[in-house]
Image 1 (tube, rainbow, N blue to C red):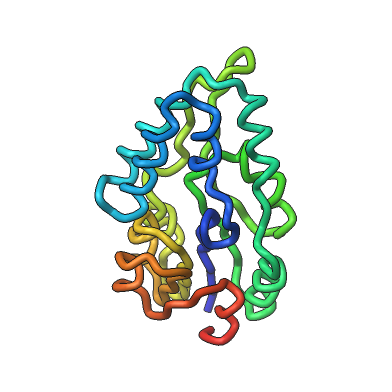
Image 2 (image 1 turned 45 degrees about the vertical axis):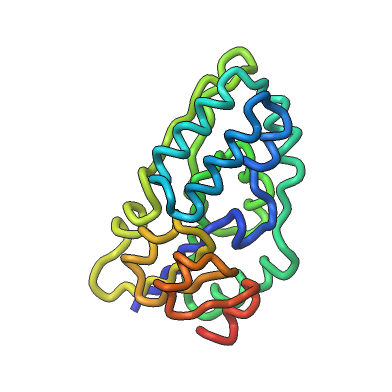
Length: 196
């Protein structure tokens, strides 16, 4: 049987949250933070909030995005945990609504497949984003077939669509919306070794 682990990135593999960081560089930073919170807690539609946040960073220089992305670092022992899952026979897919320009370099250390979105940049200015998926569930559904075991790991309400297609669902952290749907709740990704 094929085994695939879909693992959320921000909040799960890293403490970095792009939107909270980039909010420090734009006029409407408080609005960005509020939209992020509403989306993560499931109080607004994730996609709607995401598109609104993208609108709020239009006109930002890509150099600012790159500066913020330098703060994106994987949590300690993340690579070790991913290696453990690979040794256990899992294909690893790191899935994030975040932009490749922000997370790509650091995530390449994991040697896992990465599914993310991309910024649209013209003349050094952010003008929008290419969304490669509507929600994480639509991605997991594409891989879902007979004789495939799916593990989903996430930390926010935006991971719920991914959970709907998984055989085992693991919530990292204390998000109450996700905890209700999870088979296992852990505080740190390394604890996954104890539940798989």
